[in-house]
Image (cartoon, rainbow, N blue to C red; front, side, top):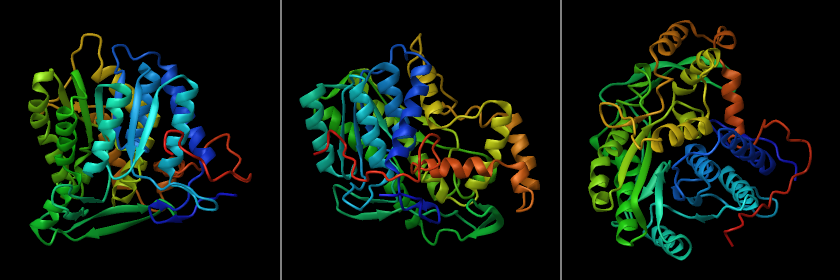
Length: 399
């Protein structure tokens, strides 16, 4: 099957298996080039393991510290003449290379919000690993069915209080325009978004894992958040998504209490703005990222998801002295280079100058586009996209 990208807005409807394989291979090679993560985790559960930060977390744990990993995700499997989703192909590539390296790696495909998948995961841990010493929570979903009530919630991407107007870009065409987003219509929009993207499901996972006896002494768990610059605050940090992130961060002391008798600890890591399927959907953010990339690449401090996660593991979660550096609100910050004063000052100056005409010269919009297509296995160096490719690629541990 010849596979080419088919795009609808911020979603690519196709994915390339060979491109995914090479993408995962490049991430693995990066982690291996950085050397062993000393004192790193050995038995790891990654919830939301198939794309973005979750996938890079799994790669960092496996190839940075030789960890056995179980990944949970919700992806579409392939069939003849029918493509899988990118996350399926990513996981197939990861498992193949992990097994070739002699590493334990198994995966579970299903709704991670459900009690059924939680139980399935616990049973697999008991059967194969006994206990785990790290839980990465990296779910990104627009919808959640509550496992206790059966109520289905959908998140919304809206400002709170008043409409928000600012610049945005169609990263496919390079056209810069103004976008206006109406505010929430009721408090229910906030509560629905918190129900999907807040900390409750993370807490449910940790409660169930603890009750089942599959958490090791000294277990760590980490979930991911974002803050960003003031120009994105109305649509992100001060909007409905930001309220959900506040709830996620407020869950840390709750989980710490759950883990107290195991001497376990939970963290929220605030990560850098990067091209992900989620961030591509947020107005203003793609334009901000394209300017940010320009500035950070010029300064030699640009990172993708794998560089971020390797640094999180090696320099934050698993330090030589065991101490984890936190900000004044108790969060890990690997967005520290993005939020440097000199970086943000230059981005703000470029923001004031940016237009459709100036965009190609003052931004890295091409880098943004490349990163977007690489999420789906396209525009990856070394892949022949004119050649036929087998679309039916199985994940070894999923029958």
